Length: 326
Image 1: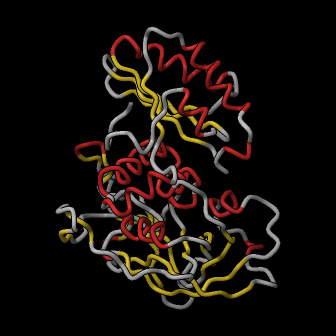
Image 2 (image 1 turned 90 degrees about the vertical axis):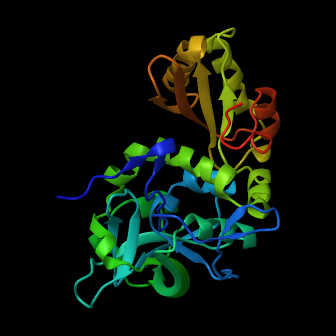
């Protein structure tokens, strides 16, 4: 029987990533600030990066680097995508001829800058080797590239006209740590909320300063709104709905992620607001109650939230203390 994923102290996954993924501690050295700083991989340069796990979800990329890179749909053959034992993230390993599934869907991140590539490198553990692979670009895709990549391989994928290309990928190196085939509907989608909160913690607490500062300045991390019992859920919903009036040119290209939190007497307001946002079609909210008597915590996805309107709501990103909800 497959080993069940482990939930560890501080609410983090033991083995939590998946772009690849991250399974354990990385080697550390002292940086100029005196903090422990993970060892870094060689820069990617202009070479695109192939991703195949949680990085196929736009909110994960948005939380890690503050934007959605330019992408191409690709197929990878000769590899198998498995779940790492005791975790919920995937890894790929090359397999012998004839024993691999037909292909793995993924995307190429084409325009990562230097610090963005470094963030993703640190997001992956030492068990991954960043190496060059050969993939096949799918021409003339008629649907959203990310949505397509999140689905399983179809018989018609290996069509004529595929264009071979080179890319870098995070390839797993410890075969004995691999488990069953990774299925996003089982291993990621039901746990997306916890995963995004983990990504926010990674950006705010684990990145070295020279990467954390540009990441937060670019909009990485989760915006956070601490609710008060002195205001009603209706008034909050009306104000958040006003974000839709924002000039689309001023907002991000993907949904904004707002973490809604309430303590004590504000718990009822937080839960009611999350339900109201979803019922009125203002935003999608995933509700996670952490302790039934003292904290309500939820995540709202709000399309094209402009920075100025977010600030008017008291939403903070770069100015927030690491791990804090303000």
